[in-house]
Length: 513
Image 1 (cartoon, rainbow, N blue to C red):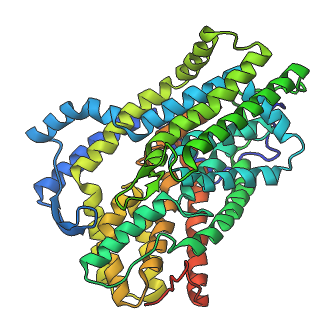
Image 2 (image 1 turned 30 degrees about the horizontal axis):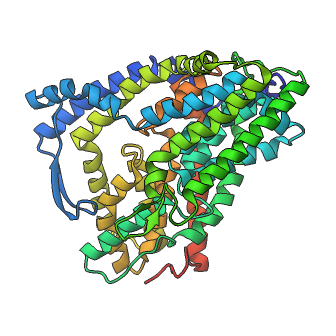
Image 3 (image 1 turned 180 degrees about the horizontal axis):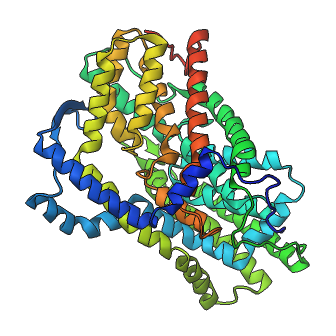
């Protein structure tokens, strides 16, 4: 494994570096979240005092809903702050996912399995191909829901570091794929089913006799996967790596070749992975497999496993070969060594726990104030009132949705609010629900990577600081901004070209109705 090389170019003194310097000059991210809570409390109190409210149709609840801004500074709000702190923290979505996955990852790191495997894997791999592979792996990982955040992103950093490239660039490339390209993929998955269900409910509520299939955006998203891989690769190589400049972090690799014992450990570890995957296939592939459960329609599916059991499967995928490799090379000899490996991994997550505590409070309190939902509805009302049609309407819809995405991270929560407004409205203007849905998905993905309200944002900061403790929120935002703008701009241009040519966005999913 080679030492991380310095970039041949001097660090840029442009706007991205200025954003980084300003962002890193701010207090610790945990304190920033605390300051944001104070600002939120003031804005919410003013909004509530002014009687700010909206009425909309909630496609999830299937009913008309009226909500008002809620204050955090009145008696009820203060009670909520005090009584919700523990629940906010323990229910924070990334917390359990990250910690369980990292227990397994920690064993593979501690035993040396990752280092040895990457030495073998990355020998003589061209730089551009490596970058493209990391971005592509990030994009296609979303079929496993949030697993890409805790597996692909830290591995992207480690792969780049092991190849002598800037590790934060690897982290950024993987993050761009996992989160910025969240809607793209080669096959349809849980997100397609979730969004199409909301779209169909919006159509039903408006008495429109039309149905969107799960495959309704498939053609467009397959092409998007390759386009975003190309864009992410170019941005990484031409913008991010030069802007990051010389690597001055603490990671130092080794140039020592693999020993015979390490080669034997790798063989044994790969055999253990094969045995595990066969066993997992037995549990999931047959129609009556143990991990399949009947859904509402009586079909035996893996929905529950993918939503709740996949992280444990990933934990086993890392801990088994990590233990086998460690046992072979003598790094893990007994149960004490195994527990020490997991303990070592958890000790490195202390910063994540602290940051998650404050991030969880802000995300939960922001939802409690209803300001995000009000912003969504007001944005929809504005777009409905301006009287555009066709491509200009779609482009403005994407831009407004991308802005709203900075404040509401959940794709389904936003779509449940926006679909009942935009799907019928665009339908009356001759635009198909599949087109409306795919335009929303472009917006929903592109700005994930620059929003501190995105659930996994705090985790990415901590992963980044494992390679350079001096880097902070400013580094992450300035690094991800070129990806966000490039994905949003080029993906939108692709949709415009798609509309001009008149291609269907999925099987039987035409652009017009």
